[in-house]
Length: 195
Image 1 (tube, one colour):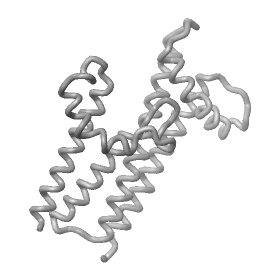
Image 2 (cartoon, rainbow, N blue to C red):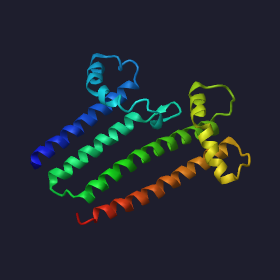
Image 3 (cartoon, rainbow, N blue to C red):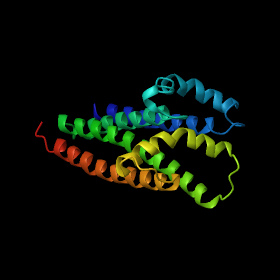
């Protein structure tokens, strides 16, 4: 039975890799319509479409559905690998599930932090006030989010956009670190369960 779980784990990991390639190819306009991309689309899109465009998985114009789909496949592969190693317990299963949830949250936080850092760098480097479609898209997505975070720390006082970005970046990094500590502790507690 262990061999079956090992094979299933490998197949799920392989499918996750194929889905990752599919997602990356959607970002490249000339390749996304190729024959190879169409084959990957037929294989991966039925699964990926379960997560795409869901309101809870979108942040402005950014859709985190495919990232969540890939994290879930990784969690399933990990659970199957646990079955194949014989180290399976309910506590371990709960720890893996909590780990997958944290990986999803952490990936989303990391992406948002990266976007905010990119926007801050553009703000610091670009002294012209001309319009840029990329910058405008970022601003439409993050402005209200950033101002809500900043309001928490400034008591509603007006601060510059640069200060808002810095405050939001620091706050999200702290949340990511604290979240990692909390989720790691919870996973360790679940791993210690005797059943």
